[in-house]
Image (cartoon, rainbow, N blue to C red):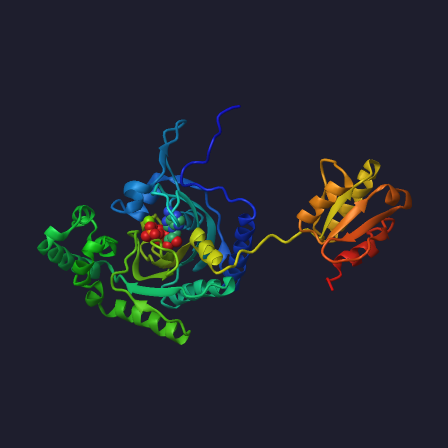
Length: 427
Ligand code: ATP
Ligand code: MG
């Protein structure tokens, strides 16, 4: 025997029965996106490294230490497995001039890659669903995106997700705040941890969302960006709050909510859950009006969010919602070898009529095949034995209710009586 090969650490196989839950989730997402007029975009999993360095920012967790970057050994290109997808959506929109006739509402789903310490809700390959609205200045669109996420929670049957919002203002407001923040943190330099000290001059805003408990009292008292907002930023933030209230959406303002990525301005928000341990944020997003221009397009405002699929599915499982794949309508039992061709033909006709039919494979006695039929979860066994073969029939046995086996002709095309029987709702 050869030594077993395992999956890469922090990268998961998604197997049955859980894979059915993923499909169910993806179908709900697709419906909700359509309900808001968002169209899907599929971009490559590999992008030029420069795309992420330029958009996410050099002094971020992602670019500093989480990216799977490599050199294409054939042509020397610097490439990266996408750690997130907003930059790629913007790249694609700019590259294909999607905004030539106005704003676009887009969404995506797929795997993302970050070299993090694997733990519950934190993997090296994980999945996101994201919604991005390009070309709209908001705050109506900011509210729409938040309500779109809320609709998704409702459709999925998830309760208890809390909304936090904040406003990061514009560059000049952040610069004013930054100076005050640095001065404040310098006064208390002795209390800073290594991360904070390292970011003090490169990205001090990010110190505000440090999770180090020892830093919390210091950060609570730190100068607030909200106090530096000018009239326009304030109006945007007030507008968003008004729209959320009108839509009956509760929220809390968290002045220390900043995003891990550099490209945000004005609105930022997170949906958080009490039920995910340390990885509490399910969905995070905000406005990034500068990104389109930064990636080489004509300036255009933009807003979006991304949710972590694994975290949402974790919440669904905790809520007892683990949608299973639908059971087969019938399992075909082959008790007489020459009946195989006929059984295949009947199975094809039933599938063409929309039924889920599993064919037995691998031989075995009638008894062992009936056991398999039962274990498959099918409602009926369709039995092709010698007696049926001679009579041009199929035996239909209910696997879920008591009752005699019935015989049905297989001569009709499609076998109408058989179909009728399979489709009848259980008593
Ligand atoms: P965190 O603070 O948890 O590291 P982040 O700020 O890095 O999150 P974003 O880049 O905003 O996260 O990604 C949006 C969402 O994607 C997160 O809220 C989370 O639900 C999910 N997510 C991010 N990183 C991971 C990961 N390594 N594994 C699983 N889900 C993740
Ligand atoms: Mg992170």
